[in-house]
Amino acid sequence: MSTPTRRFHLGAILSAMTGIAVCEFAEFRELLDFMTSDRLFTHQIPRATNECAPSLRLQFPELAAVAYPDGATGRDAALAWLAEQVQRHLATLSSLTTPSQGAYREVAPLAAGQHARISPLTELAEMAPHATVIPVVIAEDQP
Image (cartoon, rainbow, N blue to C red; front, side):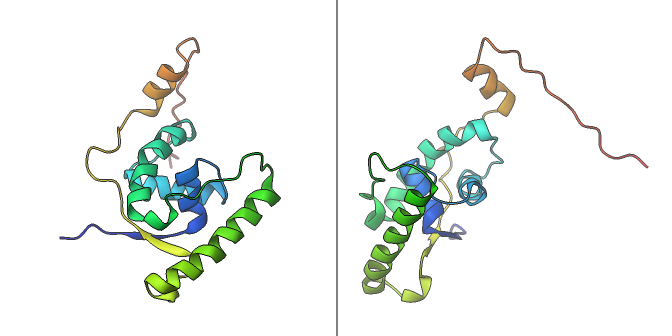
């Protein structure tokens, strides 16, 4: 049985590979949630990025050497860099496979054991042992 894949834009893939968000945060998080089969909290994103990046480099060797330029800052710089990468890899892609994929790639989830499932509260307490973590439980609507 083959592993189900899901289609993601190069922006989300490159965000996970470089650690620099060059797409909407929701797209980036959706990719990481899919790859880890988890529902990550914001403070878990850096760890999940580190877990997913090696798999993405193996899945997309043509993107493995792509690096975000040192010193580039701001939304405009990120969007310009992403547009440049999309154009560059559309040309490369057309010689490798069907051009109909465009700026999207089929991404496979991580293999078993490549993602550490850690309770968000436990991980937060480990990240900030000096802080007091107060969980808030919201009761469901009652009739």
